Image 1 (cartoon, helix red, strand yellow):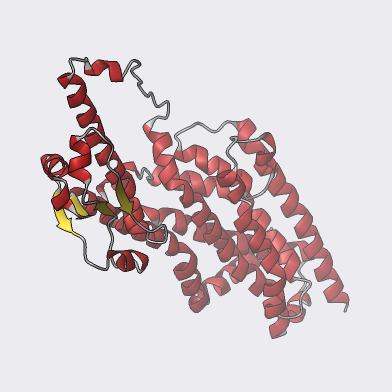
Image 2 (cartoon, rainbow, N blue to C red; image 1 turned 30 degrees about the vertical axis):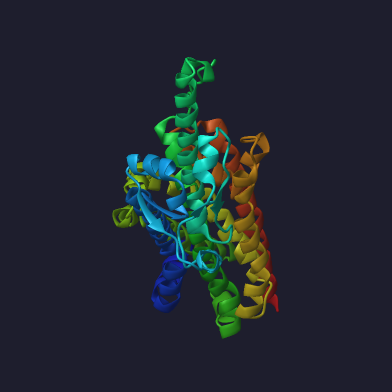
Length: 387
């Protein structure tokens, strides 16, 4: 263990000395999560500002004084649509849906008929599409008001329109609702750990072989297991460090949220970040050993990168199972690396307690995978020493 500790310190120093690689990892994996969070908050803040502006773009309002009166009573500011509003919607130059009112609107309404109005939008224009529901609810309110006035005029109680009163009751607590917003945080932290382990694992195996420093290292009077454990410990430590930086980077990222709604819902504190790091520890060890086992077979760093792409792709796809699965958590999820950790981190975000039975499968799989991969690496190093 003393010699393994010596190897660990050497590999750890070498990993931290490569500042260019560390800077790229930090920029590409650690900073990307808070950056996406800030961009999302900017998008939501823009939508909130448009909703608070209470503006409505319409064509033909002069044909409908009754509807115009209703809209103004709802404190909406009415704007005339540009002549080329359809082209502007297609090209996303206009960010609001357009209400089109025909010339016979008021006459048909006076006769008790149902005049037709159009809501013109474009599914390829997200800003305009987001306002369609608001405009539909506004017109539904006008329909309800007109129906109520007609019933009162004929001496019919308006309550007859609603024979049943419907009340909604949401069983989700605030933590669960907040977890819907923070659902992508585990994925970003996981991928930060993957890329942190990737560079360190490849450099300490295939990188040393390519530089010609692996064979002289094997000539030292150090057991193969001491070398393997020392190198593996350094790689796992780098992966854990990057995961911790990725998790805690969301804390200052919350200060940049421009949407008050997102800021109120985004509940991610130091306790959740620390829990994320603890949950990812077994996976960091297993992933480091797996990447070392893949890279030790390769003659160059580039070849190792190509072979490790399968692992990176698998780590990025497995968490999607929990996102697309609408039937809830299944027992087998706890036995799949990466998926198990994402499920546990989701429980942390919901404020649920994690039992030993829930965490144990991920730990056992991580330990078993790490042991098998380390044994394989030690065997390959033994062959390299004989060669």
